[in-house]
Length: 93
View 1 (cartoon, helix red, strand yellow):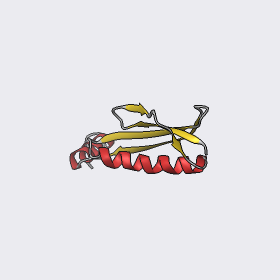
View 2 (view 1 turned 120 degrees about the horizontal axis):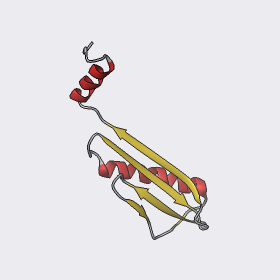
View 3 (view 1 turned 135 degrees about the vertical axis):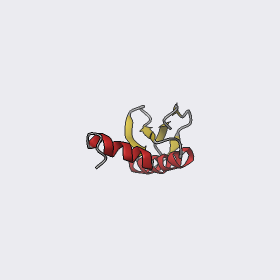
View 4 (view 1 turned 45 degrees about the vertical axis):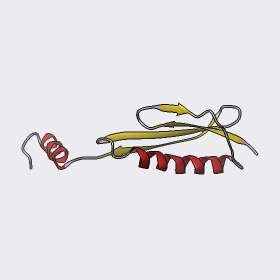
């Protein structure tokens, strides 16, 4: 069974995990990466108004066979008000 290695980035730290995982194929590895990415976001939110999470999967030859990212952007009422002001040249309309 093929072995895969995962690298994760939680927006603060990138970790190339030492252990490898036996999975049937690249599709199974990409599915595992997607679930892991969702778990990574869940474990690290909330954390400000902008965060990006990434995951990559390498095969046994250390070639990246899959990568994915999630970008979180949050805006408070004040952030949205200031964005409207800026868009409208400071008129607030």
